[in-house]
Length: 201
Image (cartoon, rainbow, N blue to C red; front, top):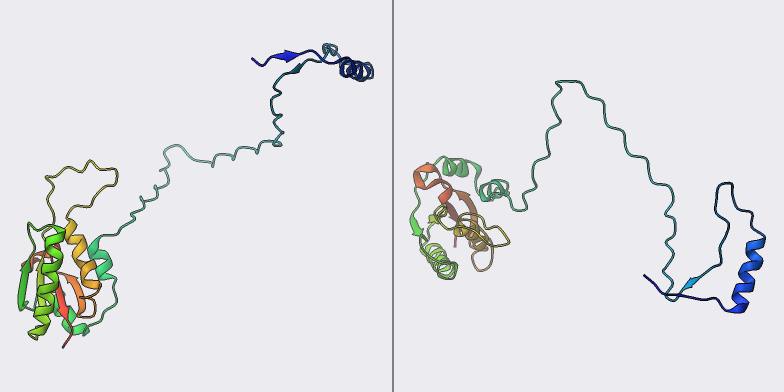
């Protein structure tokens, strides 16, 4: 509780003069002698009247509740944004590719590799394939293991290589070499592998 100090004589005289001019409201205590705290507290200004609460919308007994908005996904699935990418290759060839009608000329399996191991291996494989005149290759990443628990503050998606490889293929030095990337057909690994269609030399 803040300590209070006695008013100086001139302050007390001024207060009494003001108090004599005030008529107390009915049922209210008359004004007492003012005591000023040693450390006055700041006076909070009135923020004005509070807004009225919004009325609830009318509903009928047995009526279904409005559907909830879906949770926001900050990172869409790889297959979704690959499918939404603009088509750079011949549409007829792409249709045959997505149906698994084309046979890859070479394949790279990145199973069991770390990111530091897989990145240079992918660069070597893609550049060598284009140098050999190949157009379609298969990169196998796997779908990721569910065995490793994720206890970190930022949740990690299952299959880190599966999410990282398309990003590597879009960046230098592989970006200028790669024409199109799509998820493989089930006969070639499905969502655990990618068709990489290369540009001509």
